[in-house]
Amino acid sequence: MQTESVLLQNLFVPCACRCRYCLLSWDGKPVGIPWERSAEFALRFRQWMQQNRPELQFSFTFGYAMEHPELPKALRFLREIGSPQAEFLQCDGMRMRNEAECEDLVQLLAAEGVKHLNFTFYGLEAYHDRFAGRKGDFAYLVRMIDCALKIGFELSAGIPLTHENAEDAAALVSLLREHGMKNIRCFVPHSEGRGISLEAVRFSQRDFDALPATVQGLINGQAYMSEAAWLEKGFHPMEKRMLLLSLTPENIARLEGQPFDETMAEMEALDEAYYGALPDMEELAALYGDPQNDRWYGQRDLLYHYQRRYIAEKGLRLYDVTDERQSGSRRY
Image 1 (cartoon, rainbow, N blue to C red):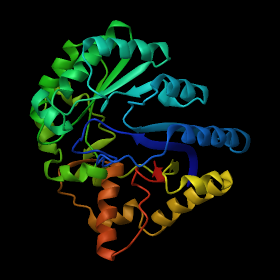
Image 2 (tube, rainbow, N blue to C red):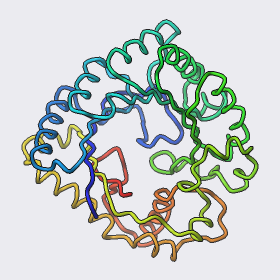
Image 3 (cartoon, helix red, strand yellow):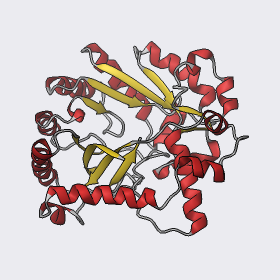
Image 4 (cartoon, helix red, strand yellow):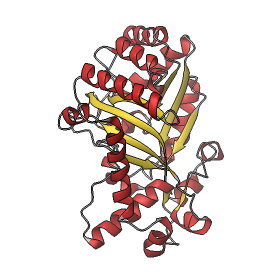
């Protein structure tokens, strides 16, 4: 398994939404540390990596949302250390703004070098607001899109498809097109974090077949397909990994005093202990695969589905490296 990159994160910014499939299981309590302390650590870590592991990519990010209390200062720092979040900003979960405030925000972002804004829409307005847990969220995102287009931002929108919202997908895509959104992708939401709550309404082959071609074409058919199709086609090899280091009040003092090579080894050991305790994708598919199942998955999500079954059946107690609230890894 080849380590390709390191992502350092600080989940210290509250999110204004409470989405049903939140990857980070946002519950209103940030798990990160003060920004300045995390930035100092990030700068030292990046300098060490440039000198000792220059072949690896390094990124530093913050969350749960991008509503940083000192956003211009944070963006400048991210730009200085070459972190992608300096140019690509996800607008979900930021505080609600009126039109004038949206215009001020996009002007600020443009001035600080942000080039691309990304938005997530869970359905048409009423459904989206219920899903996101915030009345008015849909209208706010559309308002941001309208303001951002005026000054030439690159924009993209994602639509997570479930059985519940599939019949509204065409109308949603049409509405977004009317507001100038050219880059739209539809995808099948994961079941990590609070996404497990969507299992009962997981998108299926029948849902796909009922979509108009204009929406079907927005789904990456190599990345998402039914379990039956995955089992027939086979799986992509996973030979690389990203290491994730999440800074928390519980680990920051130890990490600050620990050599970075030990930190790297520690993260790789977490990854290897987790995956070493589980069969590989093909073995899990042989144990649990259902060649009749028409529900759709991404490969990583289907692997996660099988792994959960194996862990439960064997009664294993493993540190979960796939829980992106904490330090771990992502294989691909």
